Image (tube, rainbow, N blue to C red; front, side):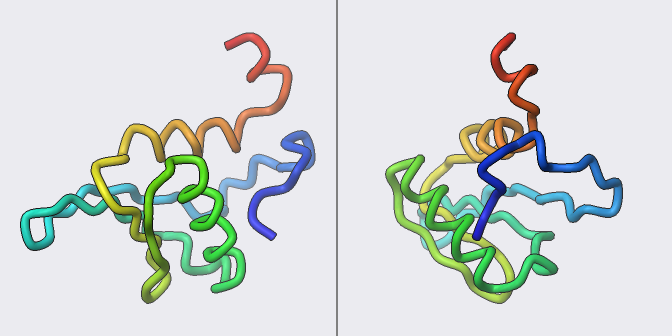
Length: 94
């Protein structure tokens, strides 16, 4: 589940959902939300959330097709998605 293990197998599909990453304030705390991926299905969203939580060492959940990550992690989430979408050759040159 989640992202393909081999990034070369990912095709650049213009109809793929684009994650919308936002920072929200709730009861004085920051929550990073990732929406726009609801077409992936709950199992895949759970897998992506699990990988993000592990990578960012923070808590989070999936609610109503939106991934919620605790804290201000907008930049880290953006770089995680970019890394997952880059082919291996480009990633080596960075």
